[in-house]
Structure formats: C-alpha cells, structure tokens
Image: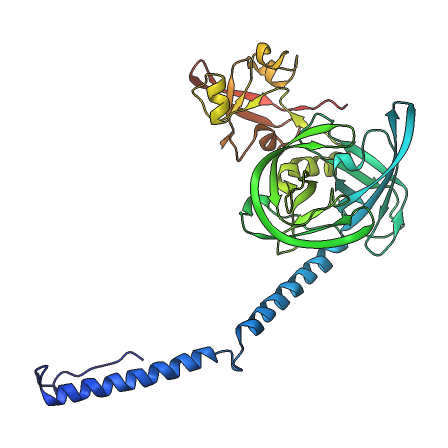
Length: 390
C-alpha cells in the first residue's frame, strides 16, 4: 500500500534542534543495521547460502540439460549418409567412399544434405537413422551444380519399410543474431554418429573459398559459428535453443584455425525445399549472370560511385560474357556495366548477397531488380529461370 502522511500534526524544527539531531543519529544507526541485514539476506536469497561455485554448477547443469533436450528432440531427424562414388584419377576411374550427415524434411524420407556429401559420380547412397536402422534404397533427387555458391543436395529414401520418419522442425534463420546459442549435430569424422556440440553464432554474411580433395568452390552468405564442426558433420543441422533447424553445417576453416565453422542459413534454401517437396525434383532459380560483389575496395578498383551491389562486370574484366545467352537477365535487357542494387525491396550488400536473395525464391517467380546504369536508377522485372545442371 502507498504511504500516507498527515501534515497537520507536524511543526517546523530547525536543523540544530536537539530533537532533530537525535532523530538523525537514530535513523543513521537503524539504516546501517538494516543495510547489514539486507546484505546478508540477499546473499542468502537462494535460501541455502549458495556460493558462487555452486551457482555456476547450477547454471552449467541447466545448460547441459537443455542441450540434452535439444539433442533428443532433433536427433531422430538427423541421419548418417554413406556413399560410394567413382572419380576419374590419373590412372583411370577409381572407387571411393564418403560420409556425411543429412536432415529429414518429410515423414516419407526426403533428406537435405550438402552437395559435396554426394558428389558427381555417386553410385550408391546408404542412410542410417539415429536408432541404427539402415536404408540402402536411396536416390539423389538433385544437387546444385559445381559452380553454384549454394552447396546443397536432396536425397529420397525410396522405401521407408512402412515407417513414418520424424521430420525436423525448420526455424527462421533471419532471427539469429551474433552471440545467439546454437547446437550442431552430425556424423563426426564419418564414424561418430549424432555427435552433439554447442556454441554461438560468431558472425553472418561470410563468404569463403571451400577447398575439397580435388576442387574448390565459392560459398556465400554463411553463418560463422564457434561450434565444433568436424569432417562428417557436413549436411547436418545447426539448431537454435528451440530445437529448430536454422542452418546446414557445410565447412570448417583450415590452416590451423580453431572454432571457426560455417553453415548455410536455412532461409537461403527455403525456396528449394518447397520446390522439391512440391515437384519431386530440384529446380534451382537463377538470373544467369556473372557478377562481382561490391565492397569499398572493389568500387574504388573499378572506379564506381556505387559501393554496394552486384556489378555485372564487362567482358574485359571477367574474361567473357557476364550474361548467360538467353538467360533471364539477358532476356530482360540487362547489360554489362549495370549494377544490381536491390531485388524487390531487399538491398544487395554484405548482409544479403545477390545469390542468397535469389535462393529464397522459386523457378518462375517474378522479381523486380533495381539497377544503376550510367549513374541512374531504374527498375527491371525478371522471371527467374532454372539453373542448368553440370
């Protein structure tokens, strides 16, 4: 209840009046005693005088229980993927084996993984569930081509033996911020199934050059995480504390780097997932253009006033025609020298690369490009085409 004070019983007293001095001293003693009591009470607020070490143990135990719950929830939707494939070597074709991880998307066995987990020339694919159940009748629905910055492939279990599989819950990667906690689950080193590690989102919008045994590929718009991601984790889920998939683990930094892993934001493949679910085949939306992602340094190098965007560099710079003949942007009338600065209302910048924005769409979608041509902005509508395969 609020304090109520009546003024009619008080008469003014001077600061030097003996009664005022006595009351002030008494009040000071009471306040001092109360402060000591309050401090002791607050230190024992937990009820048992819990010390700092015990409090830390309680927090750590709570975190461990949460991670355990997440692993239990998501683990049933994570599979180990083992492959045999043929590679063309110096002395002729050779057979090789590989291993990775996949995420169940539908109860009838549609799985998403990385392209490099099921490379070109894959002969057989075997999928193993968390409980040890194996499926050998698995087909590759489709994989993005080797020049594509999106390292994605889809698998389909042809016969689930009457079993209804558990599909992973997909989250919204756009809600993730640097410092948010995440958990990775995967087939570590190709032999430790459903290994669970935890960490945070360390950065986003990263672009890297990923090196394989015989090739390299440019990957864009990745999450960076300090969660331990090992060979074999590729294609597995990066999940938030709600147990929702917000990324697909795809690469780890080499060269002695520690705690630097990368994952594809799940929103970047949302359009592909919907398309494959609806059509049963992989149709990758594309514009049909080679571009340079602009930074301050790149803009200065090429003498451009625009600092962010996708620069359709002239043939003299890239060594060929930047526009795919009869491709979507070629048909729409874009030219070498144009700079794409927006797709619909999304700016093309270090947070949203051109390819990552297109990844959220489906083949046949119409998008509006805002371009800068000869210093002036204009808008051009483009219908997204289907990227050619390898």
